[in-house]
Length: 269
Image (tube, rainbow, N blue to C red; front, side, top):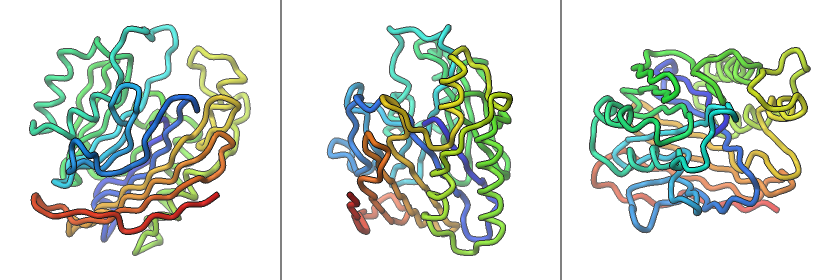
């Protein structure tokens, strides 16, 4: 992911309200969100190059999401795919802290990343760049390609928009969060961060929804978990022209033995 906005235990109905954009090169092969055939309890999209994922949830309520930390000078071509850290947590049984402690010991195998994981009742944050582990209290959070709550314009404005939504809406419709993620406004030069790429690239990447010739927002995801353990998972995919191509919606209740099927599938051309 390249933008993750979420509210933790702030809403009357929802324990977790999360919206995220995955930005990637258009040529990278990707499977849309589904329950995996080789792990039918896991709902997530899939990177078909390395087998990992950027965001997903298990039927037992374990979820995780990752974002890259942007610093081209520190990237290594031989590093493992960061999507593996999400996949392995979803498939595993370790408690969040135990998983992060193990991950810390092999953190240098990956290029820099931010990770949130846990269950709606117990959310943790980890960044391998500074090896920081944090259990998150109730509140509003956002991260892009830097540390948690770094005040980049799209993070701050995205958090403000999410705050307005959860403050006013009792029953949150995923479309309202997708609207927040769809903002294509570009920051002025003086509001753009400096992460080691060109100014033109910084400006292009400053939008919540990114669109360019070869790289952009491939999908937007909304994850809602209410206090009764009911999950609503919505993924909207986009084509190489940044037009909506497909929206997938899933609903299920978090229980170890529940069977889960898609609620509906809508295709838009």
